[in-house]
Image 1 (tube, rainbow, N blue to C red):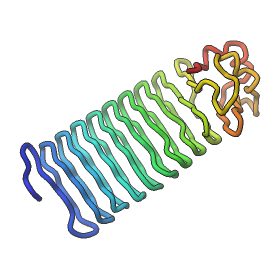
Image 2: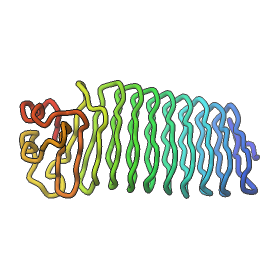
Image 3: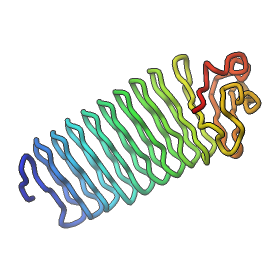
Length: 232
């Protein structure tokens, strides 16, 4: 460990190390697999490239990157930015307004308390906003999305997969990219021809991409599409 002003520079020397930061703003860089990192308080920068890492950030506005998959990240308190690479990662943002970016699929991305922003990666992701007013961005795979208790927004662009919104409720909204997947869509009413019912669940079919709203009736959407959709 090398000391830097206001914090420390921490790195590993072999796989499976347990590393500790300080109560200040640390720079923690690890290269081997199976490390465990406790960053402590402070606004820390954590970069772990080996995979199979467990990262426990403390209070503070942390920036965390993990690569090569199978990582666990707990952002702790504070508004953190967390990016995971590879696949089969688990992220818990914790308290604060966090921004989370998923990897290549099989990730579990949990916002926790606060108004969080969660971006799916390129594969099939599970996203849950938790408490607060959250924004969930679908990616290129088949994503499962739970907004949580607040007023949430679910965002969809071109090139997505077969997505499921589990808990759409009053106060939530769906943001659809204008002319998504080459379709002529510029207003909520333009989406009505793409909304059908499947056993009591509304399904929006947008080319090869679908959005299923569990326990939402297609009839209700047809009666007032602007209550559900925004097009941008």
